Image (cartoon, rainbow, N blue to C red):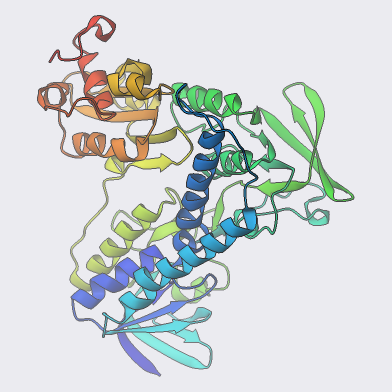
Length: 468
């Protein structure tokens, strides 16, 4: 039996952040990784490969649809999907080595194991033929694609996002089940590669957790590019017809069939808790299989913490890393830290991008029984007009009494970058006047944040570019 100060089960963002913190403290750590290669979802089958493909798709699409009259492309060429896959694999391998494998060599107190781990006692984990023991443990096993139990699902060769990133050729058509971040990113990605894409979403609108204005705006953008989107969809059955898949569904009041070469199930993720032997450690899960934790990320077992996707939403790489760091700090230092989820930004890397931080209108009404908010079009931002990138909008919410910024939501070019000014405003409780009083570079897309703040004070449609 080998003994450590801390055992971390997992090998992705949350696990690595926990290991890094523990290493800084000089603690001996055993990190046991199973499933995906070292680095977990983000670097292997999530953030890194999808953002690379989205950027490729953007270059290819805009090369055929230039924004400016002066720019003309005389010849169009087919997208080289095989080359894209090779470049994706090379990029993933390089980042996995640089950000994970090589980093391990800088953590002398961390011992890495690759394989399945499970609890055999409250403080003991079995790995292969070894038993590891520690006074404190962190579970950071991530999540896996969720597949809906629809009739016929076991008879069709459906894709998850993992298989979609490993296809040998571009499908001529694809039905994507789902209408949230992953579904929309893959929809635009493949549509720009040349696939005819149909999106089927159960909710009355795509991105149902975003503001309705955001959902409507990004839907309009995607449909303009030829992506077919259906909402209020109730799946009935899946069938196979030669090389094609048929989806039968009720759409509103009508029953329809959708036929495509590929079927992508982009319907969320399940926490990876099966096979861990959690009952032997006294760790409980909720109805969705996520590990139950308190505000300090402690599980129902006093000596065990959990972090990342395994504890449920929000399933974001950035949140997982933050949670991993906090879990290790709380476990080894007793710091009793917690995360302010209100100031955590999130983004969807469509084109234009979607990003948000803080409260929605619904949450503002619940907390304050009021919503003080303003919305402006991206077309009202001078830089957007100048470079002909006018799709999208920005919505800002402030506290109804103090005018502290409590939420910002946007569809905009580079929204994933722009949202950080809004994140600082929410985190440090800046007011509308604080934003207005801050000089912004002109002309920039970041002026969108200042313009929406100014809209609380004046009619910006009648405002000069240089008015404070």
